[in-house]
Image 1 (cartoon, rainbow, N blue to C red):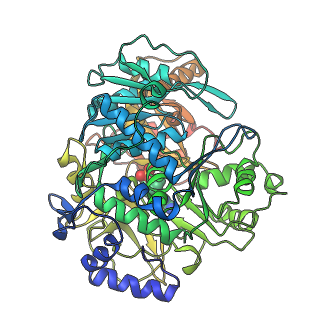
Image 2 (cartoon, rainbow, N blue to C red):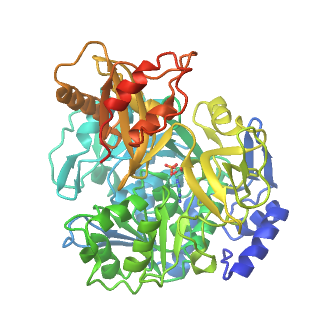
Length: 635
Ligand code: WT7
């Protein structure tokens, strides 16, 4: 059984043990799983290359631990509880036995279509059970899944397919989301026109009754390939360090990178963190509202909960359909015990008014969680009062795609809570704060750059196809440290508060984006010469996107140009990257070395033009006044 901490005293004791003897501690946790062969060595590492290997020589299959292991003890318990978009549509459930059979059938279908251990399979699907099943089917046979959020554009999908030369893409016909009927397959069709030559098969799940074009000989129906397969599929024996999945995420430079996670460490850490942060008890109903297209869905809808033998809710819809009470209606309907969502959703619902929270029985809720961005105090209080009724602890979970699992967070009711603070590190996690010169900030009541000084089992191993990029991005800023990109404060009691990114990454409605990525998209517009994108405080989204754009020639119809730019960004990345504001300028403030002074742009975008500091060293100080005068009012 996974260790489940039951008091703050116990946390302190376990934490101490976990950092004094990390290898002993994680070996104990790993021993609670089924392995084909035990590891020879718990950990091998250096942060220089970097090289990180956990449970070296160990052999396992993660799906045997998610599924087979539970068949005897809880085969008839619901594993996945699917709540469809339409509130009156039938709920679908998969017991552990049924899920096991569905995964095996799908795995056999993948094999029949030539997918082997190590091959990459791309998913472009809405939140339906087949997405979780497909992902697990890959893991069953040792194929590497790469899930692309189905809100990304054809171009973004094609970029990701090509970067990891996927052999197959699995998609749905359409997606019913809120009141929208979204074509999914046509986006894949378009992506396939963009040199995705590695794709041999397109497996299409019939999710609605919409018509799709199946004329490309690579296209096959999911039901035709899967339904007739045997429900028995022996699991591929994987090395602990074999790749489990790739997940693309944005950084401060260039195109998104494929973060690589491996089988053994990811399994041990997602299970451990799930059980401790959410204090999951047998029989509980757990619901995380994230999309499986992001790491939160991978770790805390699919793997963590299933490893722990939990009942995990998958929700197809949106928080505001058919009305803004949907989350609470679903919590009441399924008697949800742990509810995990993003601050942006909380703020959006809060803005709709309290009446939407009223009249629902939310007494089943034992733990509330938040993830993805800093939570402001007002939203925290609202969540606590209106949803938790002052009775449910809130776990503010800080982590990243790269960390694989939750790093800093309360453990259910067993940790002190302080609004806007994620709190204390989980066992085995050794955070520290550095100043910009790399000096370690000792003691409490300090603020600096958040780094982690010792490996943990689910940490990033590499960026797919470009190990040097991994080193450069995370391990080069400070020697022998993993650098998170976040700024953080440690208060007088040693609790951590995450302030936000210190690099050129912005967080819009919990979606992580590189400003450079958005700039590159904007620059695709033929009339745009140069652009600069910054984040600015936004009441609901956390951060909004503010774009400064230089055009080749004076623009007669600015509104028309703005619309065209939005269309270009939607085409290049997807609607989530559309700028909220576009200011057309004649120049950008630059230093004498030609670097854009983003500090000034951020200030103007935030609506504060009062004190822009010293601009005299700029190459072109005169543009500052123009930018100030043309600033788009704060919304
Ligand atoms: C970035 C990582 C990890 C799941 C979803 C996001 C920000 C994440 C918190 C939190 C303040 C947070 C950080 C981090 N972030 N959780 N609880 N409080 N900020 O994963 O897309 O990889 O983004 O999200 O800035 O670096 P991601």
